[in-house]
Image (cartoon, rainbow, N blue to C red):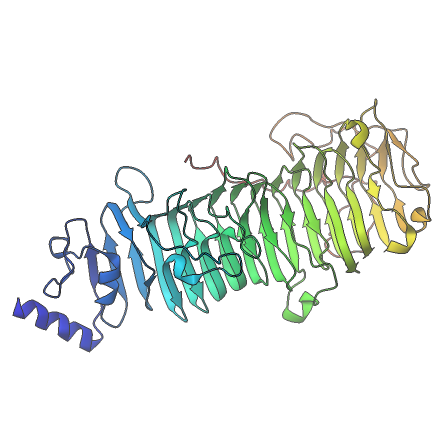
Length: 500
């Protein structure tokens, strides 16, 4: 026993780093080394308290481990379980007697997370399940403040009340290959999210499956990004938003190749900072996603690009892009999207002032929406908008429910420049557009690009586009979302979500 304690003391004093073990058969006591499975500790909290300086790894054997207060982590630490799900899972579970802060609705209590760390670097957390009970949810699984080089992957996080994994003012963060379920079920001063971040930079959120079967809440809730990519995630929220990043300045937030069931909300009602001042061409770029919600994208957000998405509306009562108040002068570029089953408007202004919205080279099909059907461009009066341009699009409405191009009163047509759009079953089409022709599409193969690719008979599309003097136009000269002479873009949405 004396030799074991002496060796461990020398390790701690020398900066030596090593592997440590936690198991259900372990013992938390001073004469236990923790450096082998047959000399393992019984708890993660005790293992962390015994770490030497330097890079360390804690291996946690299968089983359920009850945690009754937050564990504070250290620098350069890897925590690796035996699996996130299944028979050999490692489960870190909040004690059902954990004292919950009664005044939760004023702020989000950091002492209600399983793991916490601040001003740390070099942490990796993987192959674990984090849980609390649905009838006694603590705030979240992991809380990170002012830290960097954080890698959370292959974890399962479920049944927390505000934010499953939470990052504040951190950089070089990765959250990947994980499942999160019902981790945003209760509102504090505002909603959190299954993944929650604020002022995140140089980071990635990818290959995650995020779901809920409770009302409200957010899949990924964030704000204040700089050079962050959110990609290849499956998010399905019950009556909540899939992604929201609102109100703060954004510099290079990329949302791409996701399957999102629920609104993408990125509003900053008044003009935000120009992202070019930080070396980015856009504030937010939403592209190559499969989007299902009828209230698809909530703005406004200046210097925003929305391109190459397949928007297939599966719900009623919504719009594709909404300017939701404030004075915002753009620009906003919406182009090369295939938009199917539009219930109300394609672009709709709720209130405020909106300028420099550019809608070009999209293929749009509207639904038979009954009394809900609105004009394609839902602007109310000229004094609330300026310099909207609509060019090189295909608009097709059902023969039994033609749509109006835009409102004809209150000066609206003087502020929307529209030209070279093919309009089928559209009323009040301005001069300079194309009517009386109907493009034909493949209607076979993989959606969207193969399925909605125009046939070779559609000579009214090929080489009929006009040059649009806008960024991101490239060499597109066809009308509609697909440039026939170019290679079709890769459509690479995530595979089916991991089952619960």
